[in-house]
Image 1: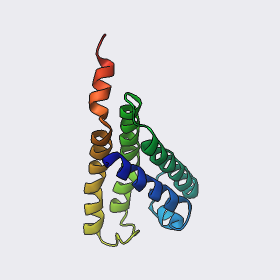
Image 2 (image 1 turned 30 degrees about the vertical axis):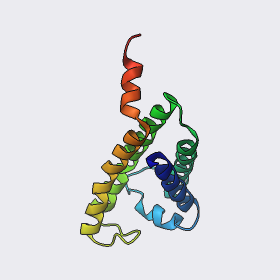
Image 3 (image 1 turned 90 degrees about the vertical axis):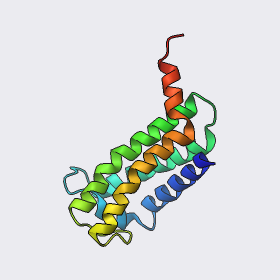
Length: 132
């Protein structure tokens, strides 16, 4: 069930990146990223859609665990953007105070844990490392 919910969340976020919330997401791209903010938003939206679909479709190990690890890695990769939103005091999605932005920061590690736990990623990756 956790994997299905995470997949649905990523589908919703990816869709928002490409449609109604595109401008909001562009405002959150860190100023130090040397790419066009729209390109970053579109690319991350496509990745979210891809991961969301995969999470809804992939259930057999070891592919499921590898997918969970890739999803967790994606959440880690976008974490600097959340940090930048806090550090640069950028408003977006109702995060209009440093306190609200700080709370948002606390949730990103939970997404990483969710991706790993819902897919059995740690167990799968450990089993792939063991000699047979």
